[in-house]
Length: 294
Image (tube, rainbow, N blue to C red):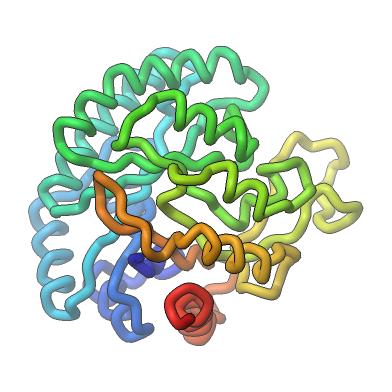
């Protein structure tokens, strides 16, 4: 199992310092979330020769590796022009991953929850184009549902992944999205087990249950917003004891996948950059203690 750190919270450091910081916190792997010089949100990937050279030099100097790229594109529309552009972005990002020797790219369903049928149709259309490419290039595509995606539910998203029947497409469970995944119940054990053998990646952060009265206050009342957090373990309401117990029962740490090899678990902490100097280390140590030292 690869334990990675999502560098979104420190991306403003610059690439070399960012990589060195991850190494100083004791991580061997980087989860490269959208970065303006590499794989920006929604836009065409950048990744110039100079950026790739700098990144490779920093990785070599520290011994850190990239476990995975995160990309977010409008590949499920709802507009066809956006979908076509997103597929073009995907194709370029696959080329960059192959160039960098990275076998895993994870992503979100995207789309619009108010137009789920149209978005699902367009998502399948995108997958018809992309699946042959990721299978040819040996990429593991991991799909998560994000708040405000066309599908926000764990089990339905798992069904979408499983429907493709491909060893190259797996499921990512994002812990800070837990209360969106089952409409506020927070039954992490049931959702992880439903994903089953298709679960290849877990993002670790806490969050509050947005369905509870006044957990979040948004003005004006009735705004159609999907609010959540990515805070440290214990700062929210996710049942981490059950989550880690279930991952142990599933032997998640010792799985091996036909594509991309080991599963990945990544610290995905965004809420308080000023806390990273200790939360990054505490989260890594908690993961190691719960899933490796038993």
